[in-house]
Image (cartoon, rainbow, N blue to C red):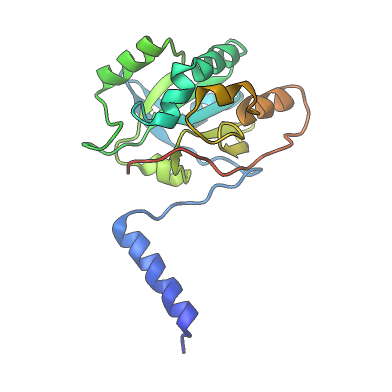
Length: 203
């Protein structure tokens, strides 16, 4: 016979499935699940295409104040240029549903990239939210770093200073660059999982 806690847990799980908000749980230190998405130029990309390379996945929403902080300051564009120059693949992913905040046309995403001086390898469009939910991406920005063996070595916040104030970037510790620098130097990643901050992904 089910006790009260079991009944409550069952109701919560069913509610999540019905509402379409149930998320997978990816784990740092384990293989990153493969996926395929089309970019803002109509080209298809699969994560498995980049086996042998470091991959950064960045969930973004151009209209989110937290995302604007990192783009208007030049922080994310600078990181993109710095690490793609070292052979890192940087995939900016948008999972906003049609009609919700941050949902742009492919041309709109390309304009955003150009206007911000950004340099991702590709902007991937996840309109149905399938990949976002696969990776349990809950905020923008939300960051994932995958090593050349396809292992997830970091997931979570871009840095340790939640907020929308650009001035905070001067003292913030960037978890993405720390993970990449350590791994690319053959050192262990000191922090592999954090709680992301920002706007909720608009599934």
